[in-house]
Length: 257
Image (cartoon, rainbow, N blue to C red):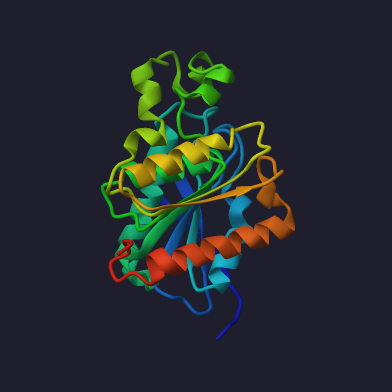
């Protein structure tokens, strides 16, 4: 048996009349748990290969990862991107048994815009999400940080003409906080000029206040996408693995007990 993490590209569904692809990272020693990986890029750029490092690192720890793609704002307006992430997670859930995974042990992780999608999926999926992880994610498009960057008008690129408060609230992960929200890991840097680190603090405080579980890591002096540096990428992967080990792998039902 190979000791390498094997990668293959799969069709997970369709979005807007085209195929949606994802890269499956198969670990040499699978532990029965999986992670959907969602890349970032302000909803306008990026691709599923962005998080290959995490697919490999998690694979070495036994986690099967599926790095999905989604339609960006230049191709289709909201909620196309979120719909596509739901499609990918639905595929992961449907194929779990054939992949040797438990449907109760499928988590989701994303960076920046992907972190926002990760949290939205955790808060809105009809399917069980065992845990969510989000790096430097925007969580409130009606909050002070978003408004300082031009919201709501600045969100027309993603939403079209309807940038009503109701619409912005519906795309804000913080709107879906409740006692049944999955265990969540948040990572951010306190020198992030793109998404203020206090967004993650607010999300964590809201989750714990609602009776859910949240773990927060604020890296001093680091900017947006800090984990692109190899040393912080390795550290982040270790933190992800430890969190998943505790709240997905070690939990019989995939929920923090």
